Image 1: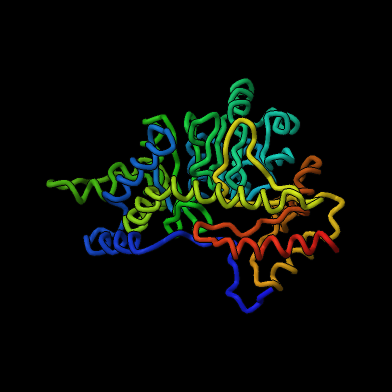
Image 2: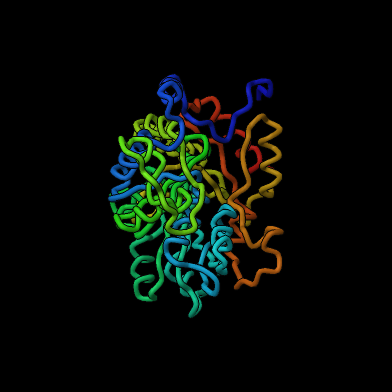
Length: 381
């Protein structure tokens, strides 16, 4: 194997001249803070995911925080979350003074289910956060029905799931509230940034106010007015705004989404073909109720695989291939040491035995073959 070939990245954003020109146009317009391009991005994004309203913010973490504030979650409340998620999911619960209750996940998708939430929910449970892990959709129909019975709000963490579908509809369609990410690891990127979507216009109006210090009138509205506008501060808010430069890039990226998803599904199908006969290696595939966007292509090592996950990770690195450990488990991190939780056997197995393989829009067959060759070698140890 040619170890002198350029390193294969685990992820590479699909950015080009069109995004550069859009960002430059925003800069040259003189309006670089939150303004008309943010409003246009919100409108386009809402339409794309089948929501009535979208509220752009500075990250998915701040989107989760704002959503919990908007839902009235606070001190004394419990929120059921997966431990198997980026740590921001659990952290957002702590930001509002509530207690994260860790639920286990199903092995097939890495997502919480109505049953795993039911197993740990408490009388104080005010909300449930369901993560569409790695772009693999959760069974939101079952979760929405269960949350309605329990009297708990369902917040969908769709950070990874732009372009994924459930029952033929976009993830986020019909959600009480969903939070999204535009980090470079995601399909659609604005560098950093996030979005909230909802069908509730009044609630969206409040979220827009909260993202901008609780102001009665946004900076964009004040500057656009031909007469003086004296704003007031109706409640304690935050500075969670997106800039027009970011939104300009986001609008271009959103127009590429169909091509991104199609290419990723093509690459994922090729991985399936090339790895399908490797014993002890199981790719995570679409659930019967939906389709993922393949933000990530992750595999699970079965107990009979001859090499440990970290040994495979090291072998890939030695061959010039970047890969990542499987999804982290928040309850195993130092920040949550001592935090009480029920047994989480599936979570711990996935975080120990899974691996995220390289997958990006411009990936070549030669790059993919290099990844596959290492995995096949490790399977023969």
